[in-house]
Image 1: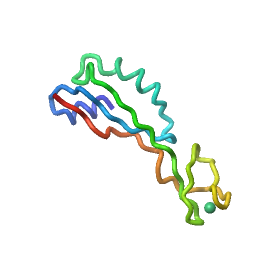
Image 2: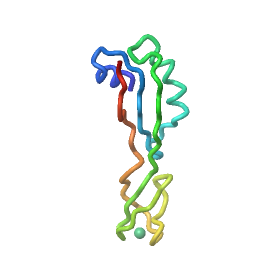
Image 3: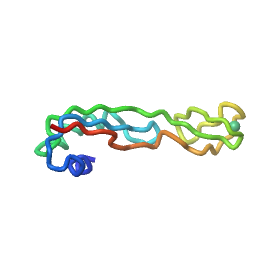
Image 4: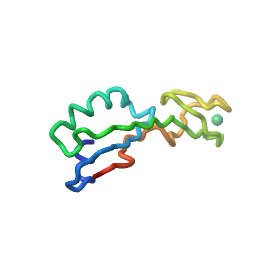
Amino acid sequence: MVELCEQNADGRKVTGVFIEIGDLSGVLPDAVQFCFEACTHGTLLEGATLTITRIQGKGRCACGVESPIFSYFDPCISCGGFGLTVIAGEELRVRELEVE
Ligand SMILES: [Zn+2]
């Protein structure tokens, strides 16, 4: 992720990083926050502020209803059916970089 940011920064110093983490991505925002400082040490991202936006999981059922989901095994809120198609919550991406 740090590498990705550095590529985007194109040699400029990064002052802020905004990332999105989906609830279903298996990535813990706390862990990312914790690693960020260590991972960015000595890079263009050193000293940058990290802002994490969490994205709630959402699945679409065969019945057409979209349900909020917290795991891959959550059922549809309308019909109780399983096997929802995940349409949100798997994100792990850099949304925006602030550069000097
Ligand atoms: Zn349903």
